[in-house]
Image 1 (cartoon, one colour):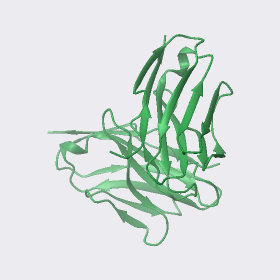
Image 2 (spheres, one colour):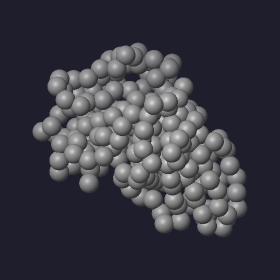
Image 3 (tube, one colour):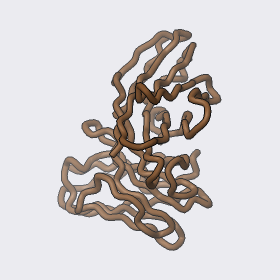
Length: 114
Length: 114
């Protein structure tokens, strides 16, 4: 158990809909990351937050947004969903946001868009 | 930006045989290097990492990896594998001078056969 908690574990929704994935980082960790894992694109870095502020941005679509709240939990919002958005979405956390910090992953949220 | 290439998508091997999972990276700046392991239906777990110092790093379960700057490689090895080592292995790199937006390779599926 990494200490990173993600909900829901599984989610099925229709195209065009909007969903929110939730993440609680490990106790004491200030930085949160979101990754998308799919068969065709592998593990893609989406976005990083540190203590409520956006720190780095990767391959995140404009239809997707995220935020980190004052209690350090984070949410990833996915809107106007397409079939291709079906994937495993990981949240991860680290103590700080500096390069070299070990990143601890949650077990992921499986999103299926039908 | 940095990138990672894992040269083998699948590596089948018999139990107690040695194994090497290959990883090459590309970056214009100094990097940190990581190997993560993903067991079925679980999130990624850190196996080992290279930050500085000795170029040979070891994990607690018998894996080791060697940082080779001239060849820009960070291959993972184990002299004798077990059935329980069956998993997906990801090599990752992060830029030392930037935030922790770690970039992952496509993964290598190690299958250990009895």
